[in-house]
Amino acid sequence: MRFFTTEGPVRADDHYCLPPLARWDLDLALDLIDQKKYFLLHAARQTGKTTCLLALMEYLNREERYRALYVNIEAARERVGPGMAAVVQLIANSATWRLGDTQVDALAREVFQGAAPL
Image (cartoon, rainbow, N blue to C red; front, top):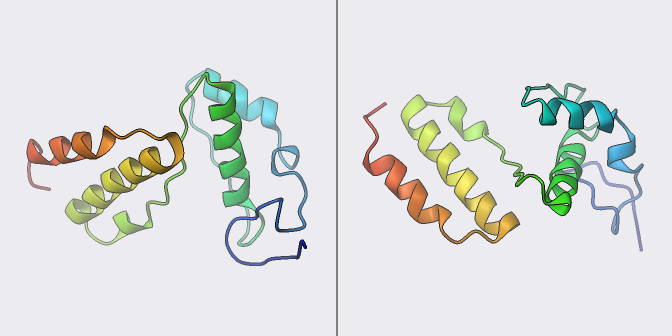
């Protein structure tokens, strides 16, 4: 049974929603990605930004042209050194969980063993 939600990412199999990739200009986003350009997804709270980015990540990974991850880097806001360590670990965790990449934990440790103190 599906229901409306106001917390966290929407899962189409559990929640009522509009198709996330149909809510914005997907072709424009894909063109920017192909051109290796940055873009900003800006909208008010609880409007589906995370849901759209997760859908874009799944779309890109399904196409197998890119390996995309979604990582929330809120932890980097506190202090630079611990924040960067948290970001690297979050990326490694996401790569393991989303892409099944089992080598990233060792790579993350290697990055911080050779890094200068921040």
